[in-house]
Image (cartoon, rainbow, N blue to C red; front, side, top):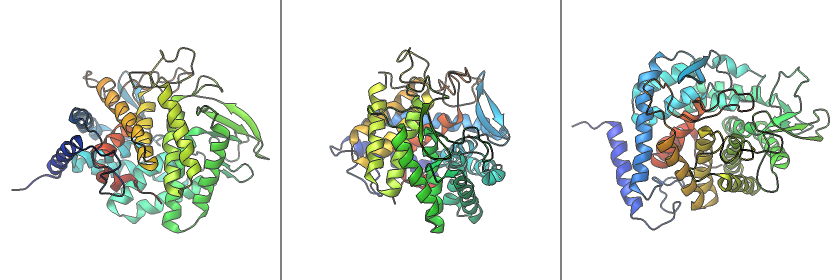
Length: 417
């Protein structure tokens, strides 16, 4: 009798849940794979909720993905709107398809993920954006890790080479926005960039050229210095003098104000600084990740879904951003392993469980996305409480971190240095 890969995964996961439920060890203790816990929830109902959410995502993607020919950027009236070149979010669509393939074993997702990633090929030469990590890590790096095809690896390295051209050696930062020849925003850095640094570390590990990692570390040190407030909160933007590197001050684009705390930016910081710590072993980055995480957890409402800005005047009773929640959850699960602190894992699980119970599109027959209640840019009234492609991606990544970490490690590299 033949047994499908999906059945094997489900059976193994179920057995692991039962074993974990009866265990009295901390979440990090029983760890057969590089310090990674096979199944996190001790509560079988929690595991079942997460598995049901992943199964729902697979069903939704089976229905929607075959007709998608470009890159979803967000929804309008529950239907995806698209970008032909991927904008800054193009990597999340193939990334989501890879997550669905890992969870389901359905080869249709693998085929579609490769086809979608291929459409990003021209962007590996793009020097006009800091978002090449978002574009190429969940798409091309993952494609190489899974298939071993050299062209995906080479393209990701080329994208890293394009990214480091945005490095300002006087200010020790990677410029966020604008063409290299455009003086506008030449000294502007944003919290989001911390998530693009792992592409540079990948390039160093693959080529042996330390330039990529050195630039990543220098940017992370600058970001750590200028973004982190004494209470652990952060602004979205910080401006520096591009000629001297001198600090000018905080700002915002997607947050409420320069003194507020945009929740998705805080989430990028939790996840990104944890990743930089894992790649470098430098404890200052772990300390920063923990401070950011502690602030976010202190600002969360009892429903475990972040408001769009933790310090907006109407917070905590304000518009939600479930995308900030699932990014935070992924960062917390990683931070729990890195810091040896089960409290972060428990918090990440609560966010994922709450998202699965209250933020899915399961009640709508017309919805094309998986996660609802996301907010893209509240100050611009651009995409308030819609669906966003990175929310779908990080929901699945978070669930796989919990239920199938060995499978996820095939895609995004959960190891340290």
